[in-house]
Length: 342
Image (tube, rainbow, N blue to C red; front, side, top):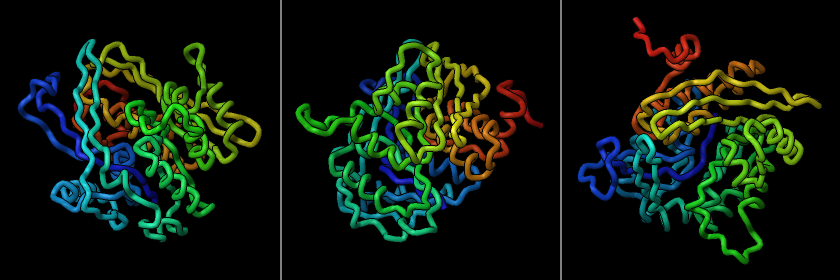
C-alpha cells in the first residue's frame, strides 16, 4: 500500500474564470492539498492508497472525508480533532495575470498534530511507499518536528518520495536568527528519500541548488545523487509559461544505476487555454510513483506517463486529477490533438 501524509484543506475559488476574490460573490468550495492530490491520482490509476492526516470533527472535516472516500482512498488512518480545518483561496491566472493563492491554515487541526497520535501500523511492512512534501515542514515548527519523527519511525524497507513543493508564504515560522533554515530542514527530509520531485525553482529554493542557465537539470541530478545516498530517482517538471493561459509542459527523469546516471525526457505538450494549473505538479509526482511501482525499469514509460497525466490535469477545474490509466495512455499514444475518441 502507498501512504500519503499531509494536510488536506478546503479550497475556495471564484466560480467565474478570471474573477478576482475581492469582487466575487459566488465561490466554488472543494477539498485540496498536495499530498492528498497525489493519493487520489494514484488511486485513480489503480493503486491501493491510504491518506494520513488530521481533520476537524465538523461538517467541513466530514466533507473532506467524503471526498477522499469517493476516490477509493483508504481513510482509516485519519485522526480527528475539535480544531478548525485549514482553508486556502485561489484566483486562477488569465493571460498576463498570474494565479494567486491565499492561505488561511494557521492553528489548523493538522498544524497541531503530534507523532504519538499516529497509528503504529503506518510504520509496519504493509506500507510499501510513503509520500510527503516540503509543504508539511513549512506549515509550523510542530509540523516540521512531526514530519521528521514520522520519517524516522518508518520501516527501513519503506520507500519514501519527497515532492519539494517550496511555498515561500508558509515558511514564516523560521526566525532570522534561528539555527534552522529551509535548506537544512529540507536536506534532512531528503536524506530519507528514494524519489525526489519538483521543478527547477523548487530545487533552488528548497535545497540551494543554484542554476546559472536554462537546461542545467543534469547538474541537479548529479548534485542530489551525490548528496543523498538513499536517492535513486529524481523527477523534474519543466514549465515554459508563455502566459497564465498558455504553457509548454514536459518532464525529466534521472535514474541512479550503479555508477551511472541515466536521463529520460518526455515529449513537450503545448497546453493552451489552461483551465486550472493548481495540482499539476502533484499529478506529475503521482505518475512517476505509479510508473516506478508498476512498470519496473521502463523508465521512458514512467516519464511519459507522468508528463501526460500532469498535462491532462491542466484541463479540469480543481486540484485533483480525475483521470484513469486508460485515459492517460490514450494521450500518450495520440499526443495532444484533442480528437474525439469514438
